[in-house]
Length: 264
Image (tube, rainbow, N blue to C red; front, top):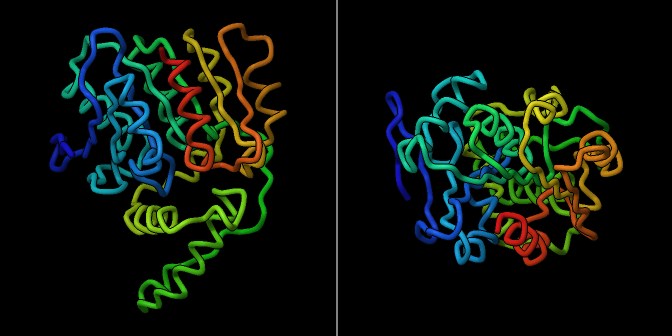
């Protein structure tokens, strides 16, 4: 864990592996109401091929909250601390999950030297969604220390939004999800739901891989392929069968192999 100072706080980064001469560093960005541990099932495998850097984005996990606005609160702190870690001239690749995909695309446009990005369960597409139901509120039960009640709601919300089957919601997923939700202070939902990804990708000239779970409730895969991939020779899409939104957790081996192939 490396807390990198920014303004009157810090952005916490986690490093896996070591700098390599044969591959660019790889930055992984988590989703909204998340933390670096959204990538817990991926960092070990990826670090065998790349120097992997994973932040708690500002306002999440152990990182400070700097501002409620997207540029000042998320992008500026990330860009500054990336430069502190890697240097302003060091190229890198980047993958994002959910809200992190939208952030990754913005960073790719602002840094200009990111040649490849991977967007998993991407937010910002502005298209149709397939909700299983409304997410349940857990905060009042948490305030009362009703841990059984909180646990039941967290499990239900994981099924509603993140993981395709109840029996795949294990103790690790429960712990990661609850810790991340409790620590989340930046409000990503209005940004994630507002759209804008189509236009951002029009301005990005590098290569794009979209990875989407077959049962991802945050999108319709056919829409993503038609709207974001069709007609663009620099873009590809991979549909992961029998997976939900948190695709890199539910189908870690398949996603790890895809990311290694893409970024190598």
